Image (cartoon, rainbow, N blue to C red; front, side, top):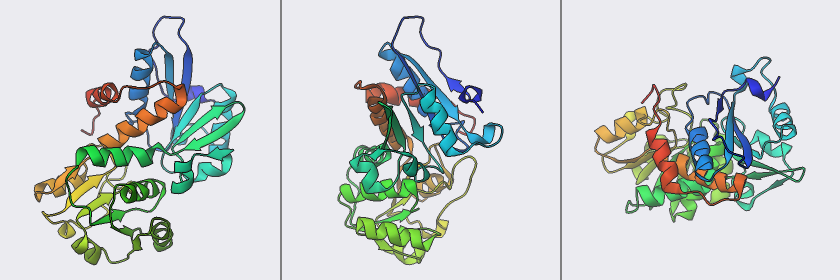
Length: 292
């Protein structure tokens, strides 16, 4: 098993530039726009920047997460982004956590430095910034959060940080919903209808809606025109949830903002350089995929 078998986004410039190699570990990730944003931003800073797609589903033997981290570190990677389904599993393989990662209980960015592995959560800030910029004036008295996994934890804490007063947490795993609700001072629920009726906004933090997992995590008839609806999924950009909400007249927020802002912060962690968010957004917008 070698990381070299994974697809790589690169096209490095012909210069004696500083080399930076990073990657993304997850399942079903080949449509991710994160690598393209990193590589383009790295080149804008004069770096020879490479970004590997590391998807066990595309590798022989379906290697374990621990083995993938070991190989990346031994190969001289500056760090890794981590996505579904490894954001919590990776924690036990690290030497330390940032305050945000410790608060959320999930890691989406690992930095290798001086023989140590440090875990960060840039999803937390990414969603909060996306919500502030994308839906600055919506009511936030109560929000229904769908999903209490690694991404749900980041979104839940971001909702609390952006002054949402009541957060209803729903997950098919009732225990996970209870744990996250306790952590963020929210209310776990098994009654989607009642929670939706009381909520101003609905946020999908489950993988439902991804190209590989189509569908919605909430029945369409529970969405009303008065709701605002946000989704963290961005491939496809227009998920079934957002299309349904838009057709009902809801204000909507797609997953692009979170995707861009989490990448902005991760780039700074990997390189120590200040990225240009507008330039990274432009790279994201220029990307074409067959699902959108």
